[in-house]
Image (cartoon, rainbow, N blue to C red):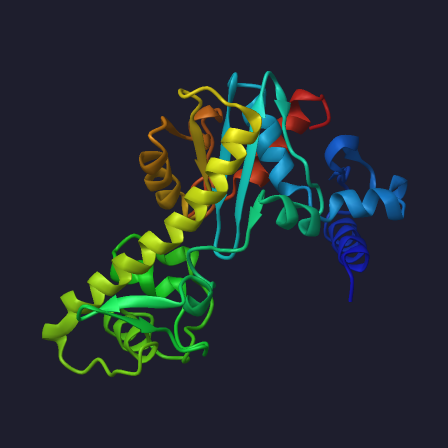
Length: 278
């Protein structure tokens, strides 16, 4: 029902599942805390702290830059310089207000939230305001989506295949995908929607870079399952790009995951190690 309840339930679950372990929770500026030491104020900090762990880790290893963590639903844009994370918002609400949290991702975002219109056959066609397709369909058509980044059902409950994505994308502008020979047409539509999404991130990142007066050679540090867009964003901004995971010591993630896919979890573990807490 609330963030406070969510943090409490997760902490209780961890203690129940790991009864013989020392549990610590990352509370942002308060660092690592034991669950029993967390009151309402600390739980409020824990509720939205994952982005700060990644940014703190990057800030300790690079003189300046912008963390760009693109996930299935959201993008974190966090500038850092001189060893400090230069954020102005902390909670989700505050970060939305100051442009450090952009609610757009590479799997679950409805396409009507990416663009109002798309070029089709030389005309700008409005997208239907229905959950007919998501960004997972766009990036399946462009060939960039890691399949493990999209464990949720498709918008229509149909197959998560290239043809299924083309059918859902066509529905967004009132058409049907029936002939496989038309697939290049829908790939072009997907590419156009990708550019609209990158353009939105470009505007937000450019504002933060100007606000913090970062040098021209300050890199973007990409993380998350959608970091392939962070690389495109760096190209548009004419800035260096690096994978945040390149700053991690050699480590492995479970299954198909890369450490870069779960950067906040890895960053919290490494920060805890540095603090002598794990």
